[in-house]
Length: 148
Image 1 (tube, rainbow, N blue to C red):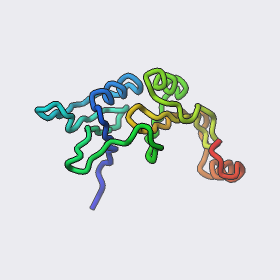
Image 2: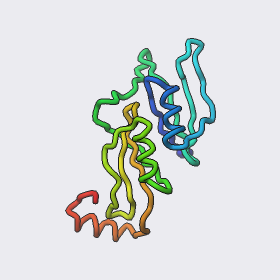
Image 3: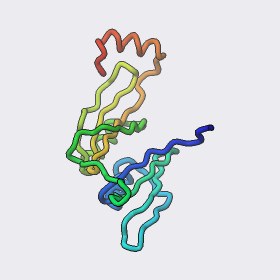
Image 4: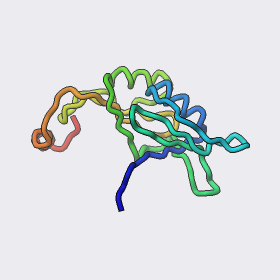
């Protein structure tokens, strides 16, 4: 068996609001959506650059639930962008919570983390230097296993 693609599939209590946030904060574009006659979002596909992220609202009758936005995050999506500081600031202005302020890290990236209003953590970063995996390991070991 061969894997052809992998998609993250997010669940939100308010799909319309989530799509609007991802468009405004991250520049996502909507490919399409499927909506039940009663208005519940059954499926949407959003383009984040060249990557599709799928989204639906909750379907408790099928065991499909959205995260609690007030709970601690257990999953993160990493966006690699041109300007992490600007995108993080924009997301926070649009209602995200700053989890970790942007900082330069040992692995050659400047990044920070936000939690969107729907309970998902997003690590947003941009490259500040190209380094080998061996150099990353050396720096990581020298830091005592700390991120920055």
